[in-house]
Length: 151
Image 1 (cartoon, rainbow, N blue to C red):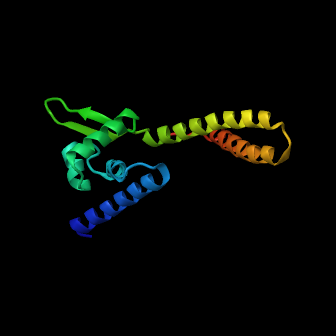
Image 2: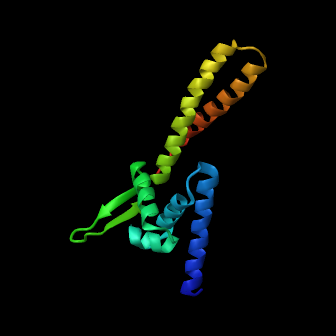
Image 3: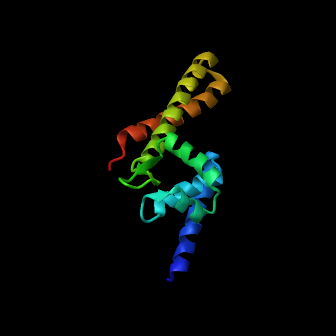
């Protein structure tokens, strides 16, 4: 496979990551492209300029998205001694953080479901619908507790 074909293949994969981030998480496409590129690039640390060139993004748009990704601890800003350029890399535990945040969010909804069960009085269709949500969330929490991520 030629270098150009390999690069095209990488960029198609980055676009798949971006599409997933848009459809599943409501993120802007550029955010998904950044994540995708930082997952598959070599070397793992890339400057903003390198990332912008590869994903064909403006530096301004890239900067605001990098700020967001670093603020939520998915991407880490790295400095090299003697180099004035900042580099970025995906955090080693980025996906563990994503999953943990989702579980915490679902857990918070589980508390709301508990309250709903109390309000609904434990009988009838309202209770069945709330109980279905509650039981699903409890199942997921138990599954995660029984099978913690190991690195």
